[in-house]
Length: 190
Image (cartoon, rainbow, N blue to C red; front, side, top):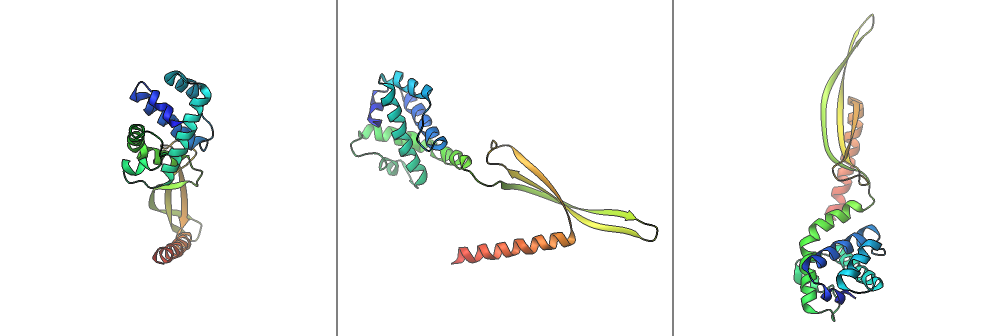
């Protein structure tokens, strides 16, 4: 079905088709294409909407396989297409996909369901003062600011969490983080 792209009158049609196929691969796991995009491609290639949808779905499947693989160059991308696909079409699609691959990988990663990720942190030490009739108290505390990105939010939105910890809380947290580091180190060295 991808062969129908040979009917394209412009390079822009190929680029837009690849972009829409990528969106289909990421947003619906390659199982759905918008009706608007299908009608647009059908008009561009002068084919039926069912054929246009099939072109998108086949290209989405190929793009999904490429995103899951690790092709090193455009020549490696050609191997993802069927043998009967014309060489000039393979080369054109491979070039377009190759030019967008890094951006698409990042975007696909951002669409995955995952936990929030720590992006930045900042800290400072404050001394809290208090007094009662007999003694004056000075308690040092650590104020920790964590900036995390939320995968379901846009890339630029970050939530800020502020924590106040005593020395004992900080010691407990550092002990736990050291244990995590040791376990991760033991896993990566084996």
